[in-house]
Length: 115
Image (cartoon, rainbow, N blue to C red; front, side):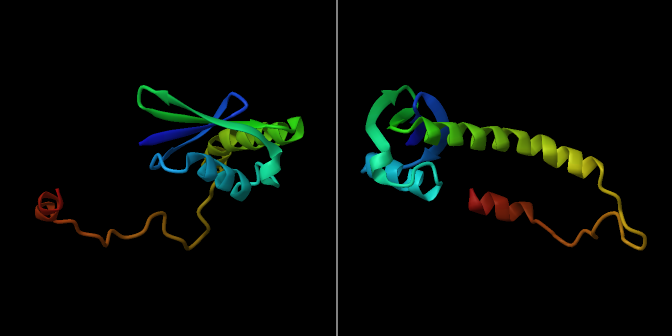
């Protein structure tokens, strides 16, 4: 089932997860992503069924933590733009080929077998 983690009203990430222990999952994700430093940084966690999945709402105690999350999200949103700028300014060094030789083959019969 699709699950959305929502921090203080801001939709942060969509994942596929089972419905078991979503609050524990939200705490572990928040810790591993550095959104919180301690489980006590969370004021409340609640779930809401929506038409295509579950929203897991995480209310953070600290406005500083929420601001850090907003800064991180802004950096993520800017990353594709920065990558396109870096790619457009990329220059091939002398003596380098512009592309790699094609070395992969794919049999369509294998696709039919896999489906």
